[in-house]
Amino acid sequence: MNVQAIVEGWAAGGAGPLGIPGPLVLAVTKVMLVVGAVLTLVPGLIWWERRLLSWMQDRIGPNRTGTITFGTKIAFRFFEIPLPKFLHNRKIRTFGLLQPIADGVKLFFKEDITPATIDRKVYFIAPALALFPAFALGGTLPWGASHVPFSEIAGGLYHILTPIADVEIGILYVLAISSLGAYGVILAGWASNNKYSLMGGLRASAQVISYELGMGVSLACVALAVGSLKMTEMVRAQEQPLWGGLPAVQNWFLFTPFGFVAAVIFLICIIAETNRAPFDLPEAENELIAGYHTEYSSMKFAVFFMGEYAAMFVLSGVFATVFLGGPNLMPVNWAYLADAYPAARGAFEGMAWVNYWLGPLAFLAKCAAGITFFIWLRATLPRLRYDQLMTLGWKVLLPAAVANFIVVGLWIVATEVYGPLGGWAAMLGAFAVLGVLYMNFAAATKASVLATGRRGVTMVDPSPRRSVKMVDPNKA
Amino acid sequence: MASEFLPILVLMTVSAVICAAMVTLSWVLGPKKTTPYKSSPYECGVAPQGDAKERFPIKFYLVAILFVLFDIEVVFLWSWITVFKDAPLDFKLFSGAVVGVYMILWIIGDAYVMKIGALDWDEATSLAPEKLLADAEAARAALPAPVPVRQGGL
Image (cartoon, rainbow over the protein chains, first blue to last red):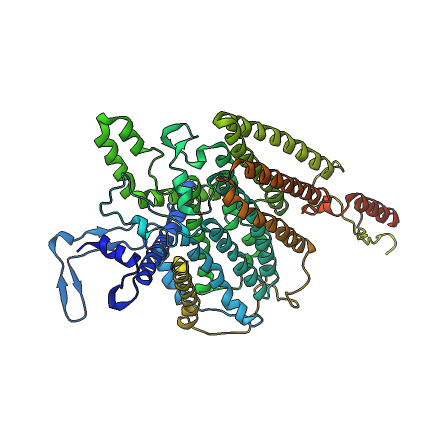
């Protein structure tokens, strides 16, 4: 039974099992693979965050849930089952991996407190709206290689199974869906009819839309350099020779100057988009209780929580696809090496196949690295003040992303007119000029901002001082 | 074309079903014992006063408007982005110059927004501090002279 032939038949439009049209069966399979992966990996991710944070804070963290200790038999009321010898007095440890699942089951059975003064419909829709984009985001992510090395096909399925839909608008889809997350948050804050929730929701929506600009423009830089919005094209562009001149190394956008700038901006923006520390102002617990999900309890609260984690996971996937070479294990062009060094051809071809088959694992490893970076940041950085947050988004990231965009455009034109070297010179020159301009501009705005010579949250209390009434003991 | 987006439709349906199921299941499974205290909004344990849907700072509105403006500017760029890389040189030079002018307008807009302090969230700077200072000085001058308090009294 040839799995590949069957799946290719579905893709070609043949009938699937039970007479259901093949493309529909294929679509459901692809969707289940991604949604299933997100659903199974999110508890693991929560566990990893709790464990890693614990280690960073010199604690142990959840490490016991799911430890099974066997005796010699399983005893029921009236009968007992003897256990096989090798299980006697053994322990099976799961290192606490089942803790988030236990929490989830518990939360399902907790009381779902619904405050009396809420806007009922919106209150129920909001958590669902917050979780929805986290699942739907994965629609255009290629988690496996889109083509087979050395053109001969031997059981390769990734190009059929990934991405869920290889549409022309890949990156636009990601931007469109990720911005839906703001609705869930603002509606939750508004519907709760709680002052703290409303403030949290407002803050969250202002933050998300502010950082969305930087995110969009930094992705636009890469899209301009690739000349397509397709995710698979992005990956393919990163498999080209590095800087157009080193054919043995892949051109991951993280390694190019403009790509590096875009990657840093994009990374900061996705941290702010998912409301993670140090940008977790919407849920700043010491000023806003729990922010927009103060009034949510039981699984509805957990849905917000899950939405945040799933979004972290999938946005790390976007980062891996756009800047880290997607499902490529290492930034090495094995096919080129195999042609260049015929003596070791076998070894390089073998590596190319390993690279192909371990693609999904490499992709997951890159996601895990991104998530670990998120957690590391949370353990390291204190929370920003709100005006710092807005300043960073609007006055630093957005101008930097726009400057980067202009540089990419200049680079493309200069490469065509003056050749590759001219292109690189133009890129570095433009970076220098725009950098100097930006520094001057930043200094100018800063000077006008600090014209009063003092800086503080509130410098002056304009209200007249309450005069203290004193009683003179001599007259009383 | 339609079949290309079929998997997206399936994905959206599946995610919508999962989200709806999660929200409804806890509603169905959990116990419901409401008391007046439990069902009042939680505002730090203090009895809530009035409705929460009050006026909120205008700055949030301003940020939203600016977002719409700047985001639309990016939206106009997307279609150009897809064709620029593989276009012939004369188109590249011409459209590049046009987009350059467009980006300059953008930068001027952004600089203007920063200059007028639309993005300043620091109260000390966004509320005309000179005026605040003058007001405070006037208020301080209008205060009656403080009554001297005898040390070691009572």
